[in-house]
Picture 1: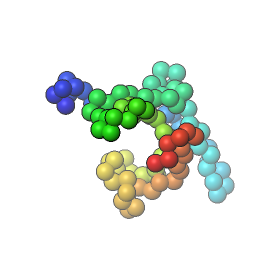
Picture 2: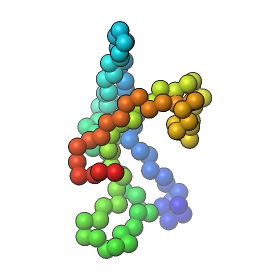
Picture 3: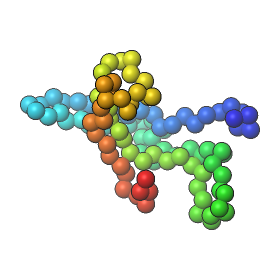
Length: 103
């Protein structure tokens, strides 16, 4: 952290959601604002702490946007560390951008 002036990665901005309730289903639309750092879903930020240990010529030390995960939370107090706790949060939707990244 010292070598990077204690700067941590910002991550992509959260999108806006439009939710329409239907009978036995909901329709969720995802929108990125024009001022978002992920407005075209192409967020990337270099992390200087990712090192090329294998001297791979195709090495890339960037975090890149890969998709969305949408959770239903029990209440507003649920934190990121509780997303795997089924009593507090449930994954209801996941999508991945189409690229060469598998995991």
